Length: 308
Image 1 (cartoon, rainbow, N blue to C red):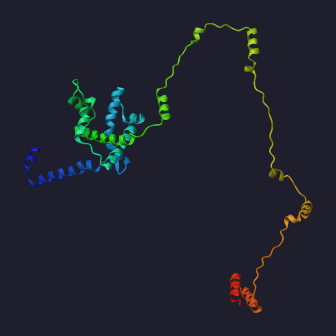
Image 2: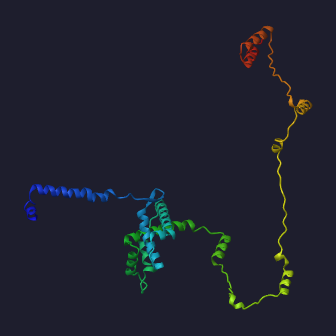
Image 3: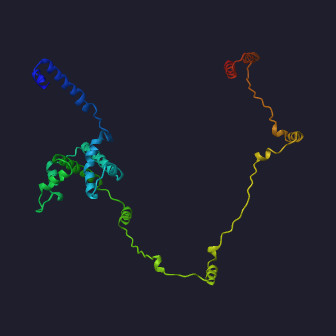
């Protein structure tokens, strides 16, 4: 069978079949890699810029490795969340984003010479002779999974942010009362002496006699005396509860009504509206208009306007 395939490999039919097979792998195989890619998840928004999950992951890796070195064990992502490492790294990214945007708005620039001086004079990268050690610098880059360009860019941002914050806080000073309170809180110490008395060191205390018990009772009667208590019963009577059991005779109600007749009778009142007509004819005209249902104010105004 293999010999038959080899003999027909150069034919047009076989080439077409192989082309379709390769195309199917390209569409249904490799295409899944691009179609199923999850979009970047935004974890924070700083001004007009966003921080995605990949940026947080990249910044979190060095912190996790430092934590593993300190603890001497493995630290996974869930443990880092419980320890607050993830929140701390995210806060650092947010602070860095705010500083970058403000330095960009103010157009604060750091020269290459300033960055070079900061890195070359960093005590971390000094060798035994006190000069800059390239090997120590490369070791730090490898430990933090950073390239030289990334470290230079980070240093440039840190210098600009430091200058910005220095300009803001240089003239600010905390009140003396706050400084004293913080100093006492952070540096105040206590000396405690602990004395341990095991039960076995007390020995056998023996059993007290009746006379000793009676003497102790007479000297500490308050320890064996219960406080006095009082009991009482409370009964609540409201007018609505009493009214349900009270029956008033009809004659008694009438008698009380007659005695307090003025309290229950409201005298009749009348509202009088008067129109002063200049002549009898005008008075009849006004009466006819009111009888026809016209408004009183309108009729009075008309009569007054027509008055000579």
